[in-house]
View 1 (cartoon, helix red, strand yellow):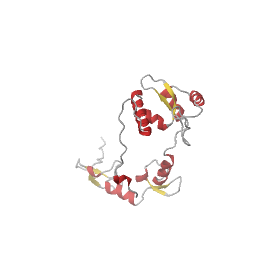
View 2 (cartoon, rainbow, N blue to C red):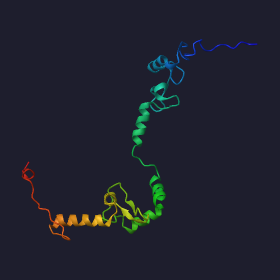
View 3 (cartoon, rainbow, N blue to C red):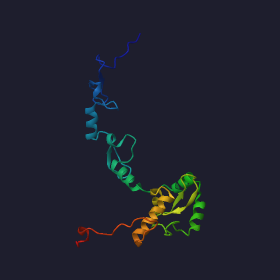
View 4 (cartoon, rainbow, N blue to C red):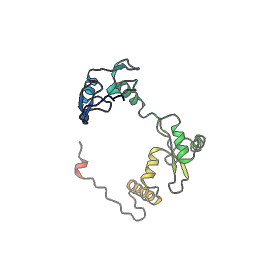
Length: 197
């Protein structure tokens, strides 16, 4: 009968490092079988390196990953350059998913409104698009709105009563007239605000 070779020390709490071949406590090992001192020195001494495919700088396996082809600096540059860029077709996909509108349906609505917001009759800002406005109760599409008008409707909770009160508030503040018995607040400006700076 062949005797098996013992690969571990007699102490069950010890383990052999694959790099330095020393027996050490099991709690002093990294995830890849190296003891922490070898793992740390491996990173500092660039024991295992390869060149980055983008900038040809030598990179370290430990810090940049075993399967990485680019160094950390190049990965960071690529990630920063992609921030804020939409994926091609993402807008059409989201409008179709949320509202059931195809890009042709959206274009038809846009043409009906002459490319203007349905509420303020202004074109969208440069580089911006009109947003699809819908009733949150019925799901019915009401039209295309600029970001400001769409946000304002949401802030007023799509409530006609709240919008009417906001309308009366603005009319009262501009004309100093009393609509539906609402009191007009006096326009006294405190002295510290009227002083010239």
